[in-house]
Image (cartoon, rainbow, N blue to C red; front, side, top):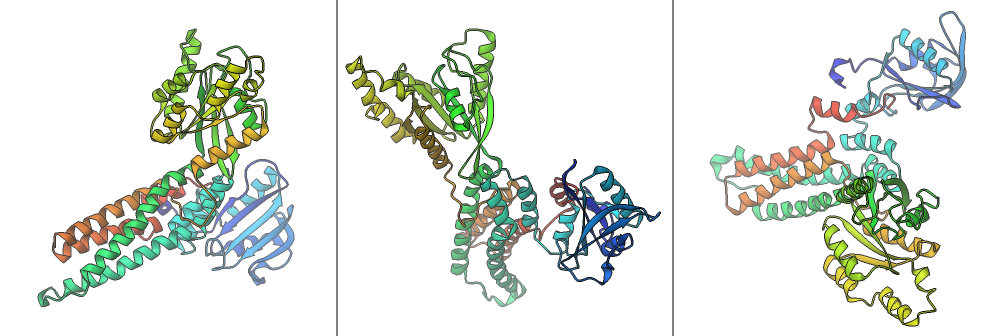
Length: 479
């Protein structure tokens, strides 16, 4: 969307509810003529005489005085509206025919069809929200989990914006003193205490680095966690997937190699969406189709945030588990080892010695698993995928690996913000280096201006047409 191709003084109209047939559909207008355009075709009270934030019942009629629908009209008088302009929302019955007729009627009366995201763009341009809050509107609409919803809602309410604004203001206060020094460069005076400036920049960098580190968590909350379930054939991977989902999603069989392609489902745990991927068993392929499935497994592991490695405690030696983990392990992928089929292990009463050895191994006494945890930080648990309390244990372990708890911490979830914060930190690092080497004040001031610019980009205080087009072009028409 190129917002400069359209007159932002126009009154715009769009359907604000999803396409399709439903109980109601909402048509939204915004602009200086929004109320008068609706009033011209609304039969009920005179809308131009009504107070803001009121709802009125009546009918919408066309030029031939034919009733198109009985409606409720909600009025939001400028500046107390979403966009800061006059906004009218007309709630019609959920007929596509009605929506089309009413929309065309409003267009004939002087409105034009809104561009994607134009309502929120106007809210930004009219000072109703900053750019990071506007982006949070799109995230809130797209939220698929409680965590993503909470994160977007906090950002939309200005928590992240407030923190960035405070950092920026502290930097502006010091920058103004440096700029003042430049105005009196012939007087050899110093208004900005260099020691205080170093302290301030270090403090700001600590906060910015915390925000930068939070991006990985924010990305996970926003988009979900790619979680691959992998292991040897017949380890119980599909049984585990079915148990986690509480439905028969994958085929379970004693025949090795039953799963030949990946199966993907979404599971919500503690407000976080885990994108579970059940994969083909890891072994030497018996045919070309199985080989393709195993190759897909390895590719999915490469793309995952969490690897859940499942093995059969009855048949697999821990040396083999270690060998698999060493092949699959990557520091950036969090790994959880699950020793499965404990229910079968404890039913072995006819072989006490075997039972004793396996039970010792299952209780975590084996040094191999302890070393994997100590050296690589890999968690492990012993479960039966058929037991509800063990499945609850697995869910808890997955939630712990993500490490998110609904709280007041500020979390970065947008790549644009992450990039701007990284650039701001780079400029502040240059400020410290310049102060240490006692470079001229004008060069220090230039680095501070760069940092202020990058922080300003987050809030929308520094923008470009391309940036706004990219952000608001991803919105739906009615938002």
